[in-house]
Image (cartoon, rainbow, N blue to C red):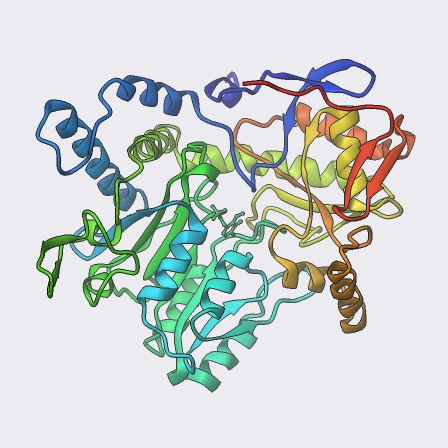
Length: 458
Ligand SMILES: Cc1ncc(COP(=O)(O)O)c(C=O)c1O
């Protein structure tokens, strides 16, 4: 059977970009964990909708009715996408996952003495918003980056009454590890503690089912971003039980959030409108719905199978490069599922320089640094307390030429084995780079002496 070429469903997968020496090369995007290119069906849906765009919820004209229907329908589709019962759950549209967790952390009404339990592999967006509201405790991770379930069990047992939420990534944006979220949900529920799954990385690659309301292994809250699922138009989703958001005032107030207002009284409106103050992002909602339709059409089985093949190939190729350090579960086999996120370091070249060489000489886009998961990186890199303090002081002095980090390759549905081979060849021969790379110690970014990328004008 002929293999399906997913890349033809995506915008911009055949773009030539400038590289060193005045030449061009086809761009390879291995930065999908950060954000993803637009699906063609998403773009086409936006074009079809464009001429009908109008105000939502308050207009009486035909276009307003169309826009309102599209916007409301996207909420229904978002709930259905994660198997959330629409009678019990609400889907609230926000900007992105970070905003969703900030909103949730404010809306669950925590006291400063309450505890939220997160894990040592979290993205800052599933850590700092909770720190703003209460005390955050971390479940330990082991040296390959997995959550230590025994430590989780011990912390639940020790702090049970004080823990008001467990909040865990569905997938790591550094190692691609998939924490056992349903097992962790069951463990939290034994103490009547709800669980949030940060599905920003999970949802573009593996199916998430929230499960029946209040079920033993069910997920109570989830959050995700459309820009990581090939619909980059500024929308994110927060899903949780309606009763939580029906209580009290919304965190943002204003137009659209009320039924009735006098100078002295406010009557809040229904969900999700109560939690979506102001004119909403209708284009984002249309894009999200079109992306969800695409996921349904292709099916998660095909998505996961293609991405597993990419990941397996990448790990096999990269493991053969002697000067490469691979982080996370490197002896990966099919017995453990993981995402196509591979973090590496070239043993004797600074991560920022490796990323620059890949870009300037091979047209490969990756991410380097700490990927908004500093505590996790410090653990995986075995950074001591003293070293950490030194880096802290360096940053205070605006010196960023030694800050620890890694180079991250993250694959999307449209990537191919050929692209991985090009990148593996580039990493294998990284010491034979052509340019003279100079670091700006204030920004930590490398450029090439005597070369500048031509400016791009939209
Ligand atoms: C696991 C995880 N959570 C949260 C976020 C934040 O997502 P956003 O930038 O869409 O707010 C990211 C982004 O990379 C992530 O990887």
